[in-house]
Image 1 (cartoon, rainbow, N blue to C red):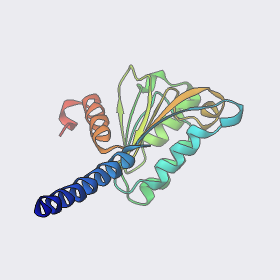
Image 2 (tube, one colour):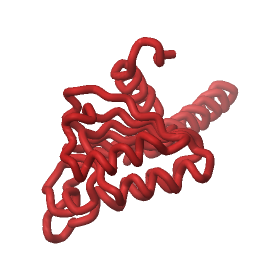
Image 3 (cartoon, rainbow, N blue to C red):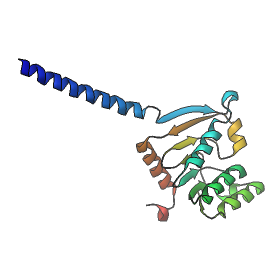
Image 4 (tube, one colour):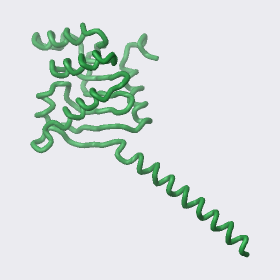
Length: 178
């Protein structure tokens, strides 16, 4: 009987350790996908702040999908390539830009280290690296993002980041897909 009691205590301890391990894994997943708003009076620059932090924290490559962009974000991307970090941007065709915007587009397109791919029907804003993704409506324009009320999704979960990378890759021309 006492031998059986010892076995049960050992088994009980092992099960408690497994429960603690599973709880730790669950807690690690909490906060891996976050949904919030940006652009209203109290949260005016949430999306801009998230994007700037994402750009500045990128260590390998930054991937972006955006219908358009402004000179502020072009300069941020130029600063990133100065650190020898490549940037890949999928955006609308050059013809969709106004005369003022074409100058900014050409500046981005002609920057060494930044690759620009044109897709005519881009309607979303997505920026991601190996650690995090930020998804929303709108486009990379600091002023527009600060005054547009948008739903912002931030993803840090590795499996979701891989899925986002697959979706991004499907937007690339076939010769660029890996």
